[in-house]
Length: 239
Figure: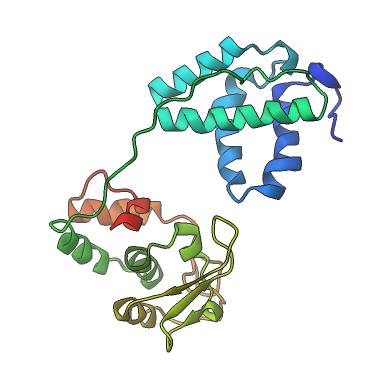
């Protein structure tokens, strides 16, 4: 067990958060990078140096209220979930005997209904076809035509693409299950336009490099070119 120089309730929240990432989040959660990002952005600046035994429920409520006001209610809920689990682990690891995150009411979340409209679609296609990188273009086409999650699409390998049968194989989805996905003739055609390289990945960031990871700049560029506002990459799953 990592004590990182202190024991029990005297360890700081920063030390506890590090232990949470090492022992729980990274080994067990596919979204551990989001945990790490939110911990560094929201939790550590105000509470990181505090000893965990001194942190009260009202202080956590204030933090979540600030995030709700300055960011979004949904983001505050995600931070709440992380903090609640961090302190739950602290109880499980016998650092403290109670969780200060209990009895804190979650924000009400409004389901997002944004998608690419029939009016926007021709402009989107025109803007997408102007993109210079065949890998970025192919990735966004596949996201549009299949409903794959971004990570599933960008990490796709050629060995899991069967163009003759019109199928993609995803070894592990967000739920932890594998998936065989039938794809349309249009999607097959768009995949045939993606250059084959020495890399095992379909959508690469260099001549033989690793697969694409972040395509936000390209996405904003395409949306600006098309004159489309308030459309996220994830919204393509509902298109």
